[in-house]
Image (cartoon, rainbow, N blue to C red; front, side):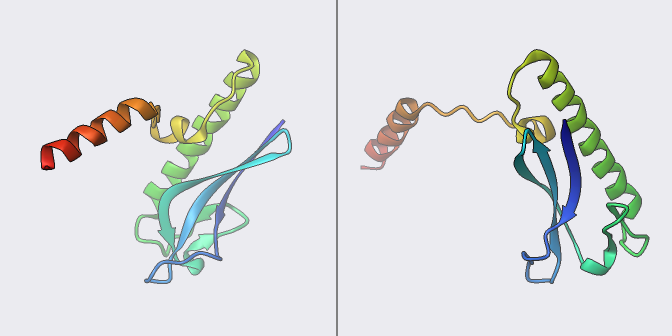
Length: 117
């Protein structure tokens, strides 16, 4: 059983006073947070409905993006439960696959240093 909630992290703020939106997913009593990449003022966020209020300039688009993100995570969780595989939320939401081989990175870095003299 999994729980998905969209939250506004009020303990973090940027220079404009806006707070980041996060997706909180609880699976098997383990919590994962993924930043959605959007910032809102606290008065632009409806905590109960988990949506941007109408006073946000792009509330309709933002709410659609939030709903899409939640739907993709729910589908990925269902798929992972049936397959028995672990998922990374960043891969599901942003398509990021980070596979870095240390030795290849070290070789590239060494070659760059050699080229610079």
